[in-house]
Each structure stands twice: as C-alpha cells, then as structure tokens.
Image (cartoon, rainbow, N blue to C red; front, top):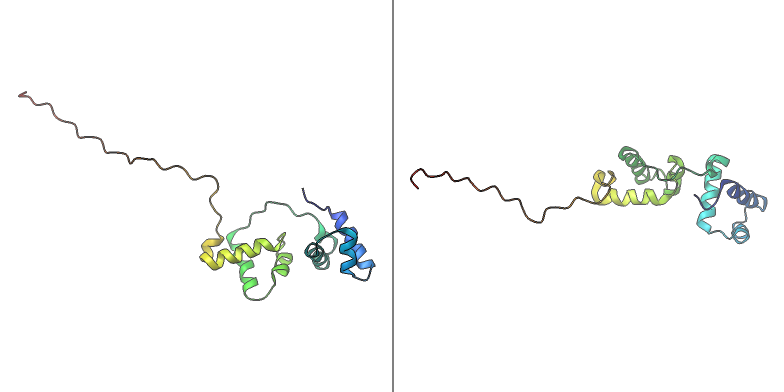
Length: 139
C-alpha cells in the first residue's frame, strides 16, 4: 500500500496550481517533502492525472530494458527524473542503482541476481571408495 492515494495527490496539485505555483506554501499546507511534491508536479505535467496513479510495486525489468534506460541517461538524453517519467519507472533510485551496477560490472551488473540462500557446501570432500582386495587362494 502506498503512503498517498491518487486523490490526495490530485488535491495537492490543484492547491499548488490554484495558488500560482507557490511551492513553499503548498509544502507547509500539506506537510510534504520538497522532492515528493516536485516529483508529483513532474508526473502531472508529463502525463496528466493518470501520472499520479499508483504504479504496481515490485516490478521486474529485463536486462535489455535496463540497458536501454542506462544508455539514455549516459548519452545525456534524459536526467534521472526525466528517464523515470519517460520509461514509467516509479522512482529515480532504481535507475541510479542500475547506473552504478553498469559502471562496476558492465552489462553483467544488470542481470538479475540469484534469489534465496546459496546451498551449503559439504564440510569434507567425498573420499573415493577403497579398492576391494581379492581374497587370496593360498591363505
């Protein structure tokens, strides 16, 4: 569940627009952080009221999509905020993490990580079975 529903976001945006785009007044009135309000304003300007709708959480992105976003940001085509709005990513933090992973490990940094706990390795290596002795006929 999200902290703010779309109707509240719309109410905040309407107040902001009605008061001649006074950011400080809107922040004081609703007790929001500046970054939150700026993001809502950008979402509203980019795609209207549907930009304020709650996006599905826990999305997974393919490595090809991640690479496309990273290349768009690295080529100075988009800022992090613009890229998140253009590609429909909930926040800029995801893109920032993808950029760091790409700079560190290249394309392999964008591949999905294995989930779960790794399996335990045996404490002792398995010993090969002892060779069987043949019974001597003379004994």
